[in-house]
Length: 376
Image 1: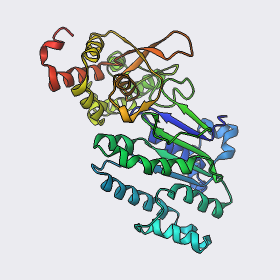
Image 2: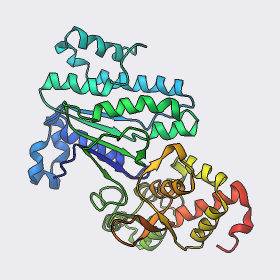
Image 3: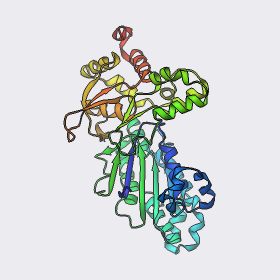
Image 4: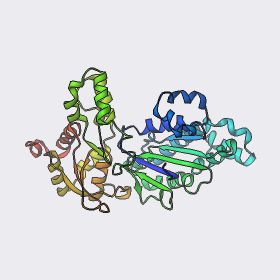
């Protein structure tokens, strides 16, 4: 029932974004529709009106999570390879392309240096529309990862112009687009990607809509523990891996729950697999005010901060941006909202023991020694 043509879902890493995107691909994709239909047998959606949308649209699914190069040249090389693989999935449409279109397609497909890589997504939607006579659904997973990586390795200014066109042209006033869905950790502002995009709806951890679609709910965790005959572990599991507040939903970390079910040990799982670049950077650049606030968090207190749901990568580690990053990356969670609905003030806290233990050790290791935390 969501009429927005372009949707952005922001959640921490390993909270089910890619799984949800894959589900959308298998549901909507016109390719292999009969085989994909079996995946939804017996599910609630099979009984709903929305099942009529199954297998009706061409779907482009591209994940940017693997772009981790340390230079812009290497990153661009990896991106070209990724786009070429995407075109290879649709090489069967070459037969209906005219000469000019075929030249554009083949330059990308064969990874030629003069290919129109910035316009590759929009061009592919046009080619698929021509082939199927149907508008295209575009799924972009972890859209912000290349930009965060670029910031990490100091080539953000080189990467930004490419992605403004690569994403922007495909999503803005594209006549071949049925719907665009992106996932990421943050909404990147002042990058030009979302400027003039009037058809965008953003669903972050601050929003009630879709709030229980990422992560595990209390009932889901209870059922999982019961299925494994370890329901007696619920209080400890809750202390270690629960505590996230997404909109109006209380959420467990799904990665940690799955790993706990596998290994039956109450230890950090998500922290050990996350890219902790943001935390490493913050721990080395924190001001005295930030450190004082972090000290309060370690003492199981909450801190009051202004959170508007946007992140400016050009000033990624400014005092205001730090709290946005910690919250949206999953290292903090909302305790409660303060003031009127139009205000953006929240109290924040550490979500659970897994994160608290990591934070404590990280800041001890990096800069400060045991004394800062000896009473926590």
